[in-house]
Length: 155
Image (cartoon, rainbow, N blue to C red; front, side, top):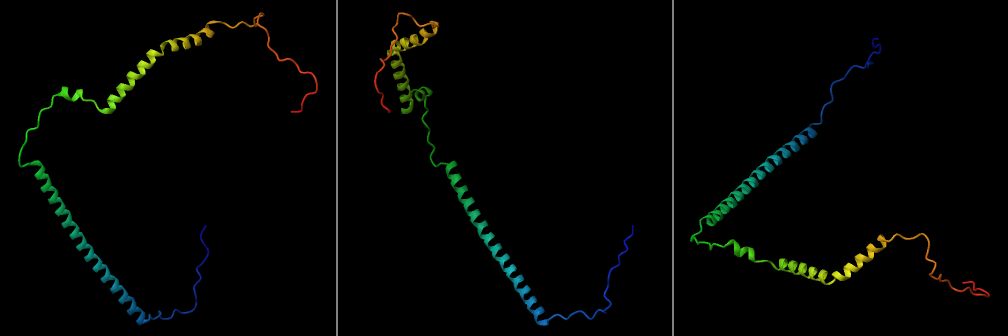
C-alpha cells in the first residue's frame, strides 16, 4: 500500500535568517582562542615534564650500570675456600635437633607404656570375642531399692 499522507507545509513565506549578535560572536571567538592557547601551553608543559622524566630515567640507568660494573669486576679477586659436602650434611639446625629429640622421647614413652597398651587392647578385643548371651545369669542378684511406705513428697 502506498503512503497517502502528505507533509504539511506552512503557507507563510520564510523571512530572512536571523542576524547573530556580533558581540556574542566576538566573545565566543575570544573564548575559543583562549582555550586553544591553554591547550598549547599544557602540551608544552607536558613535553617539558616528559623530558625531565626521561633524563632522570637515563641517569638512574647509568648509575645502575656503574654499580653492575663494580660488582662484576671486583678490584681484588679472592679464592673462596672449598667446602666439603660431608661437613655441610653433619650440621643440623636447632629445629632439626628438637624434632629428633621429640621422636626419641615419644618412642621411649611408648616402650615404657607397652604393658598398659597391651592390657587396653586386650580389654577391647575380649568383649568382641565373647558373644553376649540373651539371658542374664540366674546366680547374680537383682539390685533394687526398697519401696518406701507412707506419704510421698511433692518434689
